[in-house]
Amino acid sequence: MLTATISDFRKDIKKYLDRVTKNFETLIINRGKDNGVVIMSLDEYNSLSATSHELSSKTNESRLLFCAMHDPSFRFSYLGAEIE
Image (tube, rainbow, N blue to C red; front, side, top):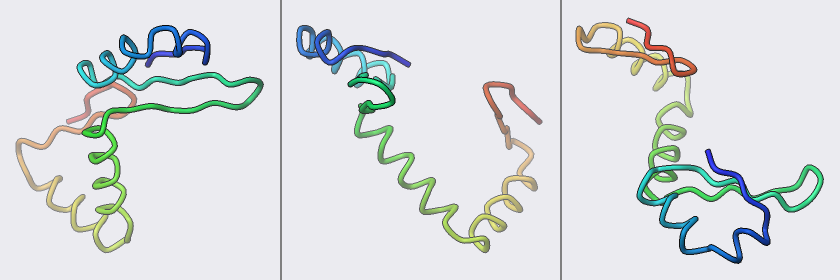
């Protein structure tokens, strides 16, 4: 995850956007106390939106978990630690 001030972002906007899109990094731009903006690549956003939609109902969530748990190649990671 990258962080920048609004001033730094303005100075090097291309550099920051290139890192976000090429490295799938998330950029947080601080805009004062407890205020900021998050920038992510369109691919990352689409992935998060799809996951949110798939988990939007308990029925879908249960079906996905059931299928995943019965798939021998299933790998789950939580906070960076892989769980089998």
